[in-house]
Length: 569
Image 1: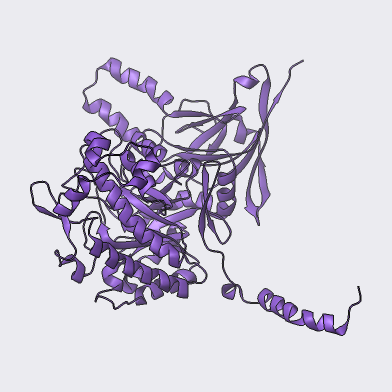
Image 2 (image 1 turned 30 degrees about the horizontal axis):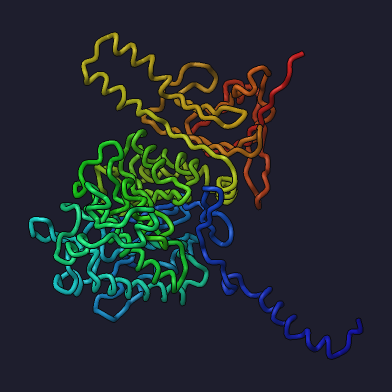
């Protein structure tokens, strides 16, 4: 080919454009939009083009003002959190109908960027825990234009009806304006996710019984729900029987939230979710005693069918005991639902549940009430908020933070397991004494505790055993930590290799039945970190450090463990 002057002149604009882009400051180049991706039933939140774990902190409800932020950031920093979840209220951005003010959002995002912290915005609008407290006065004081839920006895509740078309359109309009503002001003995507409403649903009634709602309830179930769930057509009562009232309410709340979500995504397509005021999975009570119509475990199928634009449904966990928390995590971990613990209590017992959340492929974990504005939600959370409260979570975040991107990628691509100490030593023992147990019962309790403090899962060729409260240099049975604080996170790297971090726990790998006729040993245990995605060894554990399993204290340590089996001649 002959290269003429005309050919080279034609190249000049393309070369100039390429050079201009290549040398633009990073903040001026187009950043990659955050997105939620799924593969083989596993999920990842992609931020800046790579998997990301939200080591979160959520503020108290009324910390969403510039003057309060000075009491927020110190907690975020001490926690080693990389993500702040914080409200933006409808009343705040549209105090007068049609007049919008985003000055607070401006300050929030500026300060977050200065600290390299990502933000999850919580849209407090039509519903915040059942009520319209965060809607502007021109909405919440006009019950004719913006109707509330009517009980079966005709009384009116302080909960907005999901069939209120005017309410939904006004809420949607304000949310769209917020998303327009983010599209215009948040080019680097400091906001990585948006929560639509807050703990939707109704207390005090299973559903809305207003004339509008009654007409809809007595009509055929909408075709989209019938088709998605593969049901026979009919009225709500005909199709769903005893569940009809609750499913009807859940469907209309889900559709309401989906319409707002879809409108916002059409402006800026960020991941969006709803959070849930849970019912107890073992003792749920009746709808209305819990938040009827919200995304509780019994109506997840209704929500998934009615709200396809909502990326995930996230549990808010305020149960302290291991059994109930484990069940909640299981219920909200689904091939069609990424696990995100959007809220969890900020007291000590909750902190250890970070490990099973991540082990089940969770994309984030966010304790509630993490700011020093003088409010605590005890008994759901800590009785006092201080540095000790923060440290309960910081000690676990420090184990993940330095290698967060590596953990996020590995958790998305590999088998993983998370463990939390199952028994509270003090509380569990106290139950025995309070019950005036016989000596025989007390002896049996002492025998049962070691087994209860031993967790074993199938890790392929190797079973993974985690125990709590054992001396590092001994085979003594586990006694548990006081209080329960232990946890572990394990990712399988290959058939014989695992990445491990843990807190106040012993981790051991033992041969599965497949290796029953072979001898086994630890091949190598490396302590290290990931640097630019590559594993770098700090030291090798051996001898005393491995003879009794891998014993983790309260220091943040990451290990790469390689096991081996061999034939005996």
